[in-house]
Image 1: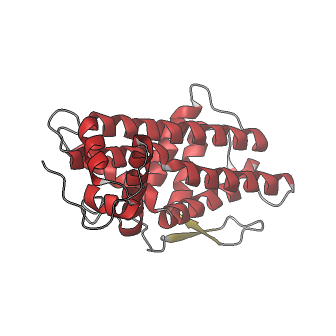
Image 2: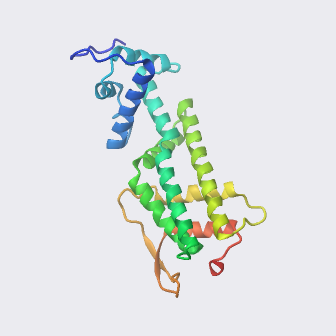
Image 3: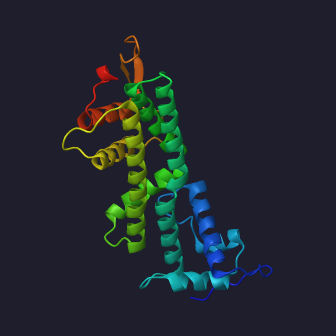
Length: 253
């Protein structure tokens, strides 16, 4: 396939690695700005060349060289963009999660909250996080698409696996920090990673359709003096998981 002719002045020269990075940054920016639109057609190689202002020739050669089997440069570029988002987009929002949990731990040390209240807050936080973080919804969509495709590119499959491993590892560390702080122990035969896997599945499943829609709230008499408080379904589900995996009940908070 002949590369399209450039209609404006020659762009500056860049090393191959910088061309690759600039193109992928442009494509990821297009996905973040526009979403999937029932596909990733918005992340085009041609559009990214224009946006990143890099030469067409080296751009097409870069992705032709990266192509696997009968992939076109465009396919290779899109698959690499998806893989990069799946593997690395968690870094920012995992930092947000870490900050949130550390704030809850600090409040617990000041005597301002207990574990049940922390779980209620985690449920509400999960909805806000998904609603405010397009990258989470993009990766959820990638996972759903991969589950329906007979021949998902290996690079995408591996990146989705690596990205989930990063999340589970980080969540497990945060769960352990919180458990140590509130002094609760795993029940016999239970495993922290299993809890994290269940937590991840439940919270992602409940919150994945947030997208600007306020979560449903259920009133429960969980206030300090039995006052009614509003709980999300995610919060209630998280509390149920904690009861199953940890030697804890709300009365012991």
